Amino acid sequence: MRITYNLIFILAALGSLFILGCSPADAPFPIMEASRVQPRIVASISGIYPKGFEIGDKIGVFPVYYNSEGEPGILGNDAYPLHIPFTYNGRIWLADADKALYLEDVPVDVYAYWPYCLVDEATDPQTFPFDLSGDQNEREVDFLWAKAENISGKYNTAGLIFQHVLSRVEINLYYEDPQEVPELKLKNTYTQAYIDLSTGMATFHRNIQEDIRPKWLSGISGDKQFSYEAIIVPQQLTKDTPFLSVRYEGETMYFVLPEDMLFEPQYNYVFNIVIGTAKENESVRRITPQAVIKVVGVGKYRE
Image (cartoon, rainbow, N blue to C red; front, side):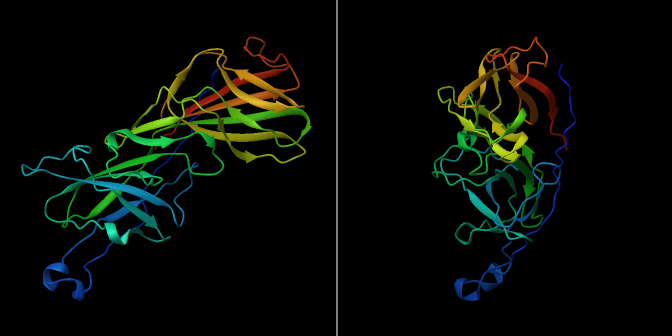
């Protein structure tokens, strides 16, 4: 039975950036230089996951100018789009000194994402690459996207309300007896995402499937319960696909999906695995007779 939980991911605005001008020594026309305005980035995250930006967090920003007829430009039409990193110092967002964006009367739309990725300048922002494979304890793997419209020198505040574009999986392991911290892996999932930064939609590379080591959340050696989370590309997996592997008493057990599952963007999927008992729902398909995988909750991140 699938129980739906309302997991609320509130994305709110917080923080500021307002920088005027540069030194007179650098500017042949001081009066004009003094009027140069950078975007005032207003962006933050609140809610249960994640709880907010931290000092040193960096977002990537793509500005796209309006045309002479006052119509918005299209992100991806330029061969070498301007890609500006902004770093949070705990109070405001600061652009890298060598990539500042100065606003004029011509408005721009601002497309932003987190975490910032250093990519080739010719990378198409409509197929922005993001890898989810390997150990997710070692790096940021969630991907957030936001857009602010009609920003100019006169109206320079870019209010960025970030959204999740990937899927989240939560895994809870239950044992009858105390255990060492188990080794857990996600199997048979597509791990290379392509993000269309013009829309905030994610697709996957069909030829790349690699293991994912989920991020540890709770449980230490000697406990009976351990929790993990993983971020995956939105995709569909079929019933009986080996989805999880767990090392238990020197053996590797593979757990299959009990049904066809569509992992959708912005959704959270909760799995419970009970090891050492067969008291769970006997209709659930599994490879190891003494291990059960059960879907206990699917909930959407909501503002």
